[in-house]
Structures are given as C-alpha cells and as structure tokens.
Image (cartoon, rainbow, N blue to C red):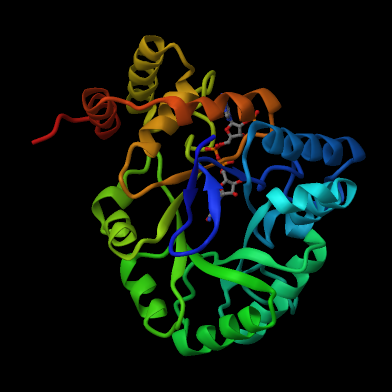
Length: 314
Ligand SMILES: NC(=O)c1ccc[n+]([C@@H]2O[C@H](COP(=O)([O-])OP(=O)(O)OC[C@H]3O[C@@H](n4cnc5c(N)ncnc54)[C@H](OP(=O)(O)O)[C@@H]3O)[C@@H](O)[C@H]2O)c1
C-alpha cells in the first residue's frame, strides 16, 4: 500500500489503517476463549502481512483485552514493533467505575488521561504510543488541563502525537488553542451511510489545519462490505440496498469487490481520509487493500454520492 503523512507529524501510515475493536470477538473479557484470542492474533498478523502499519485501539475495546491481544502479538514477534504505529484512545468511562453507581460518562481530567495512558502502555507492552486520542468529547473538557496532561506524556516519551475522535470543528479549535503542538488526527464516523463530515466543516477543518481524518466504521459496520446484508426491517432498507446496488455496478466495472469501491470512495477525498478497516477475516482484510490502487473517476464518485443521499443534487 502507498503511504501518507499523518497530520503534521513524521509518521507515515499506509492508506488504510487496521482497527482492532473486534479482535477479542466480544466486549466481555470473561467470554474470551483461547480460540477467540488466537483468531484475534491471526487477524492482526493478517493486517501486518497485507501492509497495514497504523493500528487503532481504545482502552475500552473489550475493556483493554484488544490492546492486550496486540501486546501478545508484539511479544511473540518483537520485530513487528518497528513497523507498527499504535493509535489508541482514552476518555470514556463505564458505568460502575469506580463506584457501583457511577454513570457511563466521559472524563478528560488530567488524572484520568495520565492513568489511562499508563494502562494502555502496559497492556500493549510498548514504551511509547504513536498517537493518543481523546475518544468522545467530554463536555467538561478544560483545554488547559488537557494540555498539561498531554505535555507531561510527551515529555516522558510515553506519547509522540495526539489526536481526537468524534470532535466537531469548534471542539478541535478550542483544544488546539491550548496546545503548543498540533493535533494530528480527528477520528470520525464517515462512510456512505454517514455523510455529515463532508458538510459540517469537519473535513474542511482537516484540510485547513493539516489534520488527518480517520474514518471509523468505513463499511458502516459491515453492510457496505462485499456480501454485507441489510435486514428487511432496517428503517433505511431501501436506501441502503440502492447504495449496495450502485456500488456493485461500479465494482463490476473496476473488477473489484463492493468493499474496495466503498473504501476507494473515501480515499478519493482531498483531505486524505484514512479508513480504519475493522474486519477480523484475513481475506477481507487483504481484499480491502485493493482500494489503494483504485482511482474512482469523478462521475462514479458522484453516482455513489447521489445513491447515498437518496436524492439527486440540487
Ligand atoms: N472512534 C470511535 O468512536 C470508533 C467507533 C467505532 C469504531 N472505531 C474504530 O473503527 C474501526 C473499524 O470499525 P468497524 O469494525 O465498525 O468497521 P467496518 O470495517 O465498517 O466494519 C467491520 C465489520 O464489517 C464486517 N464485514 C462484512 N463484510 C465485510 C467485507 N466484505 N469486508 C470487510 N468487512 C466486512 C466485518 O466482518 P468480518 O470480520 O467477518 O469481515 C466486521 O464485522 C474499529 O476497529 C475501531 O478501531 C472507532
């Protein structure tokens, strides 16, 4: 895969990132079997084999087990570390933590950021995280307090670069104004079922500030992938099936899978979107890579957009 610079950093990522949210096969640590762990490790190894080098995690993915599974892969094959860029996240806290009646909430306090980072480093078995992201906007966020925590992590060599996730542009600007170094990514939901970022200023801000947009669930969680289904009772069943049909027609023309066209559509955007592929099936992980070689023409790009809007353009 071709490489691209990530934001204003010296990191170079493959055009697709690999998302590790599903590598434990469950959100409940107690349910993980040895087989599930092995399947997760095989998925991560398949991603390395296929040329992915930016791996996305979060402390909450199976309550840290996804990071731990990746840590096991790196322990078994230490040479992989040099071709690994770890992106992980903090800031979401589960209900019941630390008190039985604590609510599900967001927490960008310096204390929580510093503590979470330490836990992620231990689980991953690494000294440094390449990109540390704030997962979902904490309405109580104090940019000055975050800046202090980030600066400490940077000075201690525990984090190289920082980013955000699910931030609207005004939140990005407010945080950036307190930092002496640039935020390098904004990880947001962008796919053919979720077009907001194209028109709400998110991608424009990424272009203006050289922030790399990472697209989570680039296949909409599965329905945009080859063979992905839309249930009959889905409220958007007609629209989604029309999108699938359009993708399939264009995929036939380029002689690739539906997955590849759905990803190539994101790659075409001038902001340099990096889609985070979330499959745990090695052949799906490999197939997705073909998107890097497809340059959709403008007409096809707009055909797909119109199908996704469910209405022609004005
Ligand atoms: N920042 C955030 O708030 C946030 C939220 C959600 C996710 N994320 C990140 O985004 C990453 C990707 O999310 P996602 O897993 O929802 O992404 P996705 O790539 O849109 O969806 C992956 C799902 O689609 C299925 N799928 C069905 N057919 C497929 C095909 N032909 N090719 C590929 N996949 C197919 C996969 O199943 P198989 O495994 O069987 O292929 C898997 O269950 C996560 O790992 C995480 O790193 C971030």
